[in-house]
Length: 441
Image (tube, rainbow, N blue to C red; front, side, top):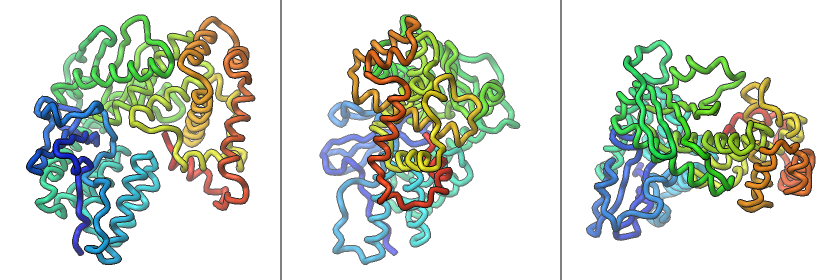
């Protein structure tokens, strides 16, 4: 069977650039830059200085995690048989799902493609990215090798990227292995006007430009969160980066559910060996916590703190709102009495298992989005400022929103119920827990 023709997203423009923020970028940089010159030749580089100025966009380097070899132009159906056309529809649907954050739906579609056409390179490419994102390194390696075996010369730039990603998997797996040998030596450090960065020597060993990359991500987080919360810290912020195994060894005892970062006066985060879009999103999340704590003097209401952090993380990936799968999972939680009231989540998420914590994050994001849609930047800054003076949360909510905690909870549930009325809720409610697992933040 002929492979589905692939196009770069920017192929229609003479000198257009797209950024690819998948896993395992090269040690020298966090991104791979691709552009097409006036002769139609595709170029790929991990050096931003090598990208022509007229090929840059305003958002170069901070784009969609799922930028890809698949573009937006439909391939003429006249050249495809029925089976090929079905493969094309499935792949394009999966790409759209990925860009919306619907990773579970995308995974189902991509695996369906491989059942019908086991050698389809595009499906292997995306499943490799998904598996790497989930820490499934062996499976990611299998898909990358399958992509390299199936991709033709027309995909040579992507083949080059796949080879680098395949090599980078060894570094990622090493950092995640608790029984592996660790790099010795002191932790490294680098500072600028806003941040003091310290990082695991294993990260320095894998990526020589590690500190400069993460400082750039932090500055982007500072700009976005300032617009959302209306404030920035008065002093420079400390940030500590760990390999996964080192993080678990140091901090596993702190939480009853799995975490990849937290804030205790400094930001602590798990990092890939070669930082890319996933780490950038995590930094947006944790930096939001830092600003919230400085403005309020603490972490409460915890659901509001986590909700704003979830929104910031989604903004880093250029996503807005919750996905339909996530909203449907919340509807299932309401139907099965597994919705945790926001008032219960105000003190903390402690005592929740992994599934309960995932549901709490979704509820918190939905509530924070409800608040954001009804306030402007100044009102949100006022809300945090009132909390910082010791005013009770319910009193602050009433002053800014006109409702207390229970009123926010009720309004969010009513909005979810209105979106999925009983006559269209047909799925088995016993699938609610599976939905919540699929809708993990």
